[in-house]
Length: 312
Ligand SMILES: Nc1nc2c(ncn2[C@@H]2O[C@H](COP(=O)(O)OP(=O)(O)OP(=O)(O)O)[C@@H](O)[C@H]2O)c(=O)[nH]1
Ligand SMILES: [Mg+2]
Ligand SMILES: [Zn+2]
Image (cartoon, rainbow, N blue to C red; front, side, top):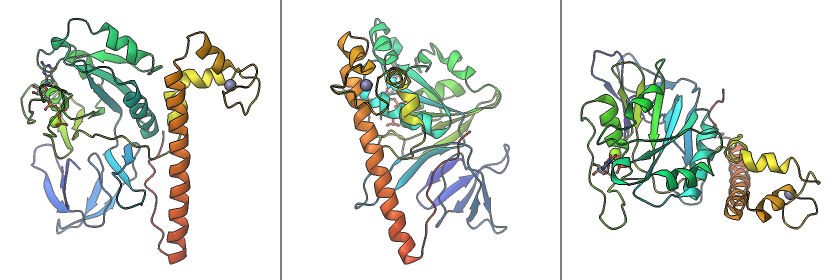
């Protein structure tokens, strides 16, 4: 599935033909999905199991917890942050939880390196909240760092580019494919906010092999699936937790708490600990909501499968 518009899926049948447009009434499809459609090319009939998927909680529709799959069957998730804005550690932490839960490999890309004198302070700030994750700098305008990014598509991998509106996702896609295909637009002077230029996710082929998925900028990244995302995204804190005296330590005032000790001597930012606790609580609340919803559906006898992506 190469592009998703309201009610319609564009499906690539072969590399030399234009995509076929089919209706996706009732089908839960996302860009990157492999789908089966009827002989009459009318509608998507079946979506094949995904090996990975980047799923967030959809913007609140009433009170229901709904999943929104941004991209499916991806190998690498590139989380883009612009160097022209102050580093947003809290946003990156959230994105990393979702990225680890997607089953794909997360990579952080700091864009617009041509516009700053020294990317080092931002790099350092984000490095602290991204243990075990590559952080790269690039410019979609000058092409700096783009060759390194292209390397992540080796062996025909699929890369999804995610990030707030205006960070330069489409500009980077254009630079990676070497021809200006995606439409881009200038950010607002004062606050660097984008204008939500890209409105549909789209799959684009790299001539040397591999695929890119450009996505519309999202403002909010709310948690959805709960696998080992938090554990991976906060691997540094979990490592400390192994050394607390009590297994059920809350890291508040307990004696021999390795986490509090790390906060006290400056090895762990207390804001990062708070942030992790908030995400754990958000995940617990979501799980409770999902359970309640499933129960309600069971009662009415219409059980809807939960969109939890498969893991490697
Ligand atoms: N100087 C410079 N400008 C950039 C770079 N990347 C993006 N821009 C500019 O930033 C603006 C926004 O870029 P887009 O590529 O449209 O951003 P986007 O992330 O696709 O935004 P949405 O589609 O709205 O989500 C455009 O004016 C780009 O020219 C970069 O590396 N260097
Ligand atoms: Mg765009
Ligand atoms: Zn503790």
